[in-house]
Length: 191
Image 1 (cartoon, rainbow, N blue to C red):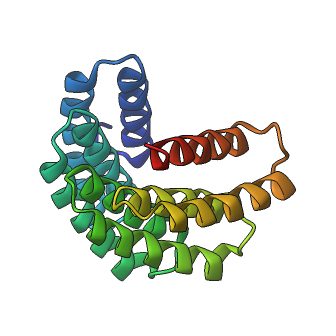
Image 2 (tube, helix red, strand yellow):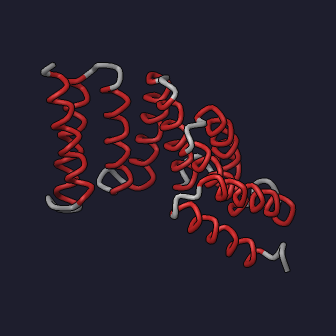
């Protein structure tokens, strides 16, 4: 039936395909439908319901509606903390997404605090060399550089790049992305 968890999983997956094709408004409508159906069928705090809420928030954020996205992401983060725990990977993804949304609104200091909390939790939960932890260092460096603290950002990025080289390899896209970011920071600092 329409409310069966497998049907809702299929709708959620279809919605992601629609979004990948650049049809964000259509995807937003489908995410809303899926979220409401999952709330009814599974409850407000079921992991699948929260996955739909997170997907809706990211779709809204992609359309530049950062304040709206922030509200959804805060709700999702709190629910995931209460349901899954503060150190669960899904909770930490929500924290990172919230930090990015806050950052997009120019609240860099608040974003930095969220990124730092997320990074420390990732180090504890997954280890210092886990790719998600390393991506979190990169995200923190962005929040720092947006506040004009270039030396600190460069230090974070150098640490991140060295670890990514060891874990992922020198030619991995994530390593190269961090190297490119470091070059950009050095270039901006010279201006």
